[in-house]
Picture 1 (tube, chains in turn yellow, orange):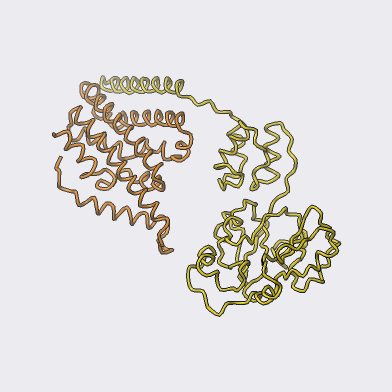
Picture 2 (cartoon, each protein chain N blue to C red):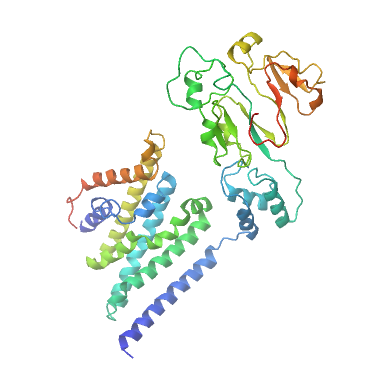
Length: 273
Length: 192
């Protein structure tokens, strides 16, 4: 056989051996002991890294579950299924968590809310509208219609309806709560998915102004609170539901002239209607 | 004096990224945050420096005496791959968040053409051992400089009103082009 060939093979073999040895030593010295459970749990998590669990990301949450005994049902995106799977791996029990869904508590769209005399020209963003002029609606409390929540949604689960009010597509929604943070007027709230009665208004103006700025506002008349036995209270001219004491049959929904307090079908898909 | 000239030539005048267009993939891929970009620069600099040393030794002490110059590519790749493996282990041990931030781009240093280019330039230009080290450190510093400047611009760019059609990759490539244009101003200053 050609001598060069043998030398070449020997040289490369020797070099390979040398580097392999070096890496083997480095691996011994630098090995990071990692609980294999962390990787398994990380695979179960959605991997959206949205931070809704309060940790820096899915991997960080997995580390916290394994090492700091963080609750297994802390991931609203994965929901109950993920919690059960993680609990199976860890051999612990989980109490079922009801999925949280954002509810848009304002129905004052373009045809209901009364507009200002002036028109709004500027960035179509709620945060900008809120700072500069409060948008083009007279109401200080309602939805601005700029779509910050729609843009904030990492799962494309929100859209603007034709009336200029966002809607949640519940099948796509994971309950991460990014839209709640994005809304400068705090119109969006997280509620358990099986909760079906809401006050669709945030207006705290006196009854007269409240009526003038919007046709679907809560004027704070208190007719819903009267027989509710503490289930509904009027705070700052606004009906607030106390869900602990609340009994649905006590509420005269048809007496509310503006339909500000309303119920939705339990298996509804859209936000309103 | 010549060593300093080689250093600045590799770092600024003939910057690997902005003048030779080597190593573009991490330059675009990891340049969205200054901290991770700088760390990437340091990791690459480390690999470049050690590569310069080890490949010079291998080439001049093993390949040339045995007349095995045709093995330079495969042996250089071997050196680079091992070094990257080592850096990966080291970063994973020292800083988990950095390890996650660099992600796939860390093992991709292996196939970073800037590093193989560095090893081949050293052979091609017949640098001495010391010259090779300065060339390696300079090339690494240049890469760090380029990727950090790019990351700084891109952080500012996040707040700028970029036309929709240019958002994301297009504006990044345009910025890279303008940056290269600026570095072209240095060309010809040093001819080493």
